[in-house]
Image 1 (cartoon, rainbow, N blue to C red):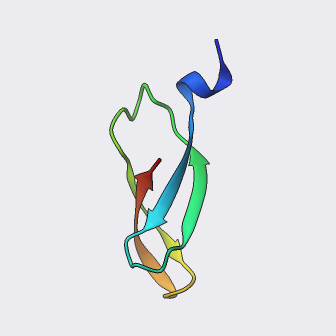
Image 2: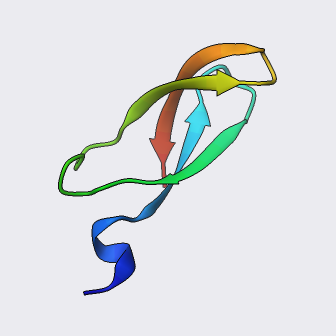
Length: 54
């Protein structure tokens, strides 16, 4: 079974419009839809939602 099949690498992009991104992996079985996480954006210096992009 290939490594990228179950846990692909994804980018989380800030919804604040700063263009800041995090790179992580996600489990496709547990989270088949696009994920949204609240993380710290150092450009605006506060926690904002980060949405998954390809």
